[in-house]
Length: 156
Image (cartoon, rainbow, N blue to C red):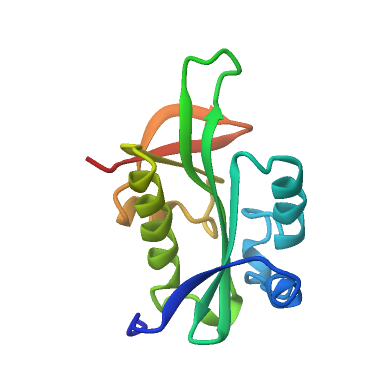
């Protein structure tokens, strides 16, 4: 586990774009999370909802996250949701607390914006992130999104 004293998030800028694009998960995890380049493209076309950030330990890039805020889940205004859209922890950096830091950071931003729940989706499977999210307190809510399990973390 990392000490956490130097962990921080950085907005994606021209100065750190290449570092963000270089973040790669382990090959057996690639089925479960899209690459950073796709996340940045999605952030570009959804600037009102996407919150892409580089995860740094000191000045060393260790991961990437993208939060989302106020997405109309059903396209009818009945369920505006916020949560973790994407989480990529670099292959050699996993198991050091960076993923937990990322989830806690998104949860804190949701709280700051007045939210009380953090949503995430995950692919089922042996090399997927389900156990990670369950350990952090996410619970499946019975929904599926494009064959992925929908989980919710109560922030109350």
